[in-house]
Length: 294
Length: 124
Image (cartoon, rainbow over all chains, first blue to last red; front, side):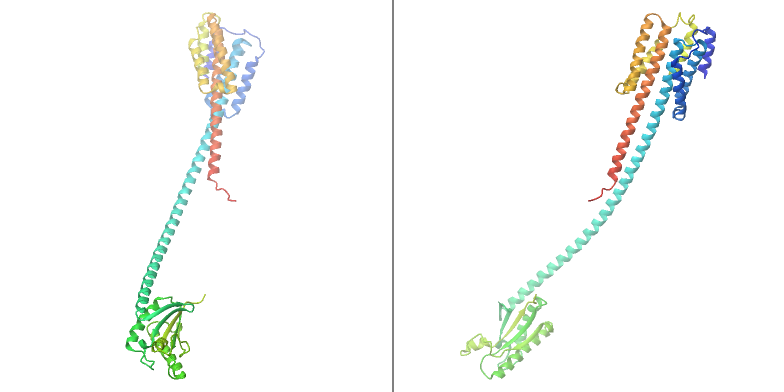
């Protein structure tokens, strides 16, 4: 307001009074309108400094009009006052926009930070799940390795047992299964069904081989004789011999429900009963190992 | 500031006899008006229609003021410079305002993009 006071004083001292008409110039009218609009808008709260400058400019124009009327000076002052009010308004709008921009940026940063936090939590969770899966896979791998090792060892033992059996028995793969053929003379005294001590040693190897084989395979011990002697005797002898071998194998660890015994007498000869060699081949015990059906 | 210029003008007035003689040459006000117009251009007034109009008016009035000074009509020059200064300052303010509005629009678009990126997409 100092400027306004100075204006009045200076105008009075310089004697510049009453030089123009009393009709208000449009510049001054526009300046009043512009100032009123600015004072009612955001400039009042956001930009009071420039609004005050606009007020001073308007007051200068008003004073000029009051003292001199519609002169070029009044019109120039009115023109400048209108621009001054518009400047205050424009600056206030810019301040408002800048404040809103700052708010938007702050919200965006907060949203980004929140997203980053969520991503970190998700990453930690995913890492934990991966670690659990890795652990489970490692355990499975170890178990698989153990199983493979066990199987390899079992196969090795089975191969060794088969090799041992092959020293005193023949092993053939037939449609009815694997057939282990033991000579009757190796196992029994003639006409007897009691196992010889040497036969027990050999059957130990057989039992060992059979336990290493498919644990679910079923076995049949078949007794066979030559044709010499009575048929009933031979039938009974073959049954007893098969049963002796079966019982011994059970005593060596073969599950009793997996192995049966059956006597066939001379009915299934594999050699000529007319020759000593043929008869020796016919006197035999066969162990048929049948893989589990299905 | 325009108010400073008003004080300068009013102080110059009593030095003149009848406000028409021995009016001091408005060298500093002219320099200030030219500086204001230059500032307006520097912040992009010429690329914004409203601001461009004001800065053009300022230039024209500065040219007229210089012509008045040539004719030793310093008083007329002083008021022409007052107009030029007012137009140049308004041009500067309008250019600043447009820049602020552009920055706000950009922030809105970036914010929207950020929000879209952080919103999980529905899987078909």
